[in-house]
Image 1 (cartoon, one colour):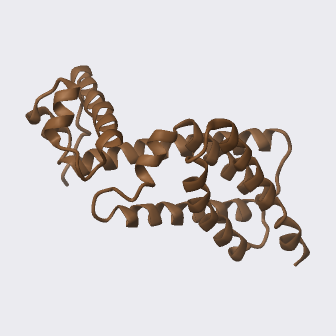
Image 2 (cartoon, one colour; image 1 turned 180 degrees about the horizontal axis):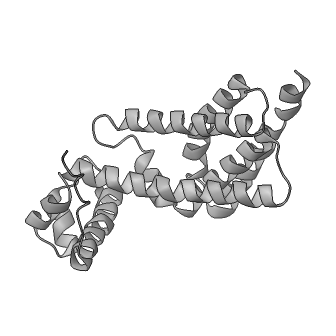
Length: 202
C-alpha cells in the first residue's frame, strides 16, 4: 500500500514571497481592476519574478481566488467568534445567533471595505460568480446547523431570506462611510430580528 504523500513544506522565504505577491495583487486589483491587471504589474510591485509567481500560483485568477479565500477565512473567524461570545452570554436561539453572525459579517466587510469591494464589484475571473453562490450555500448550511444544534425545526424560508439579503446588504454597506455603514448594518440586523416571532409562532 502506498504511503500518503507528505504535505509540501514552504520555506520562510517562500512564504514571504507568496505573501508579498498576494499583497501586491490586492493593491493592483483594487487600483485597476482584475480584468486590466497584468501579472507583470503584480511581480513589479512585489519585487519578485514572474517565475516566482508561477511557482506559487497558476496565474492571475489563482491570485484573485487565493485573496478571496483568505478574506472568507477571516470573515468566518469573525462570525464564529461572535457566535461563541453570544453563546457564552447565554444566547441559544438559532435565529438570534444567525443574525449575530450576519452582523459580524457585515462589520467585517466594513472593516475591510476595499477588499470587499474587490470581490463584489463584478470584475473577477470567469466562474467567480459560481464561487460566490457556493459560499452562500455554505453560509446556509452553517445556519441550518445552528437550528439542528439547538434541536429546533429548520426554518428554511427564513434562512433563504437572510442568506440572500446578505449579498445585497454587503454591496450597500461598503458604499458608505464608516459611521453610516455601521448604522446601516445595525438597521439591517434589527430588521432581521423582526422575523423571529414569525418563526417562533409557527
